[in-house]
Length: 499
Image 1 (tube, rainbow, N blue to C red):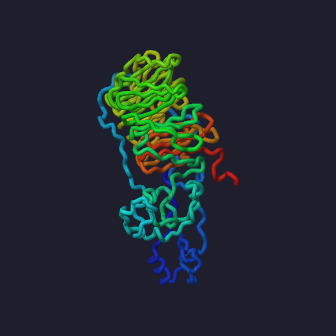
Image 2: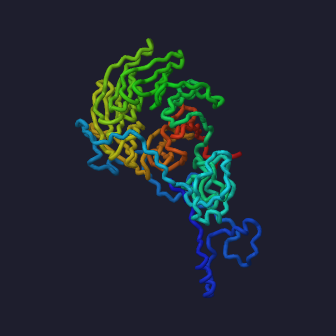
Image 3: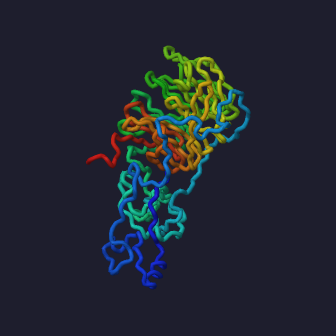
């Protein structure tokens, strides 16, 4: 999401030339910093003695990014789709890479040119060794108003702010420019949601979050091999369980909490406090899904294991091993509806660049989708569509054809690789899509228009986005540093609420 304010004219030499030639030049669109401080003694002054009007705003945020919109509430079939995006029913061949590690790029879309003081103002963070380049004196020449401590509402009213970039020194905790910094000191930009709480405790990246329906505990799993139980009333950590292996994923279904670890799936019944392990996976379990009374686990070796759930006896009977992917299965989702005919379908996304479609009754692969050119990181069912995202910097919408094939009907392009998708309804019951990118941001879009609603910034890539049970209006993000954040949709945009 590119949100910027037009730069003020800064060429004083040109102004002097115009004055020497006797021409009358318009005042540059720059506010006199001495007038702001009440001590300008120039008459006439070449700079403005008034504040600039705020830039045009969209949803409370100034924007110069072209918006992609659809004329109706559905995507036009074959829009942006090519022959390579059509479903294939043949068996998949090895066309992927064996890399399972997710790229963690620091794109430096953050204040690389801000001159900072030599003294350390990091308040004990120990990060005073970060180098600071003296390359952009104008950063200090544009005073900024004090920002809202809620970090998110009304930032478009701050003159001189470059609003698509977050100050990396502020992220590290040691930006000494304060309110004069040209770059954002904010974790998000939106008037549709707000940050409720940061939950700190994990030492490594978070790969799973779950809030079971009716539970007063939020669960999070991390690469630090721990599952933390958070009290929903106090926000405090109530318990920590060490599992002896990195947590690769986590889901909840009814009273069950499922956690994927190397070579096993850990199972908890939060009502009876019973727990046990499901053996069979080889390597890390990266994805889990439940549908039609069956638990599915996607593994590092490209296989999908299936267990039949007997809730009455607390038994999980292995029933199938789904093979076809040549590399790790990193996302699973079960869907129903026109796209997901019969009892429903299981969709599996893999590092081999493909999506496979499995019939829930026969557990056979019916389609192989080859529209992406890099690892497919996440799949999501929305209405009669399947949404997928990839490190190839695209989000694709797939739909069923009259002949029964599945093809791409819309492609949305991002500037960076996309890591995960999550869909929910906002505070006004409108469908929105959240997508995490490998530049450490999360973009929030309206569906189906892909009009941008907001952006979330993080120190490292957000690996998991999870929604709370319906009616709570909450969602959660977990990033590569181990920080878990709780967000809440507001019923009205912040700029429309009255105090």
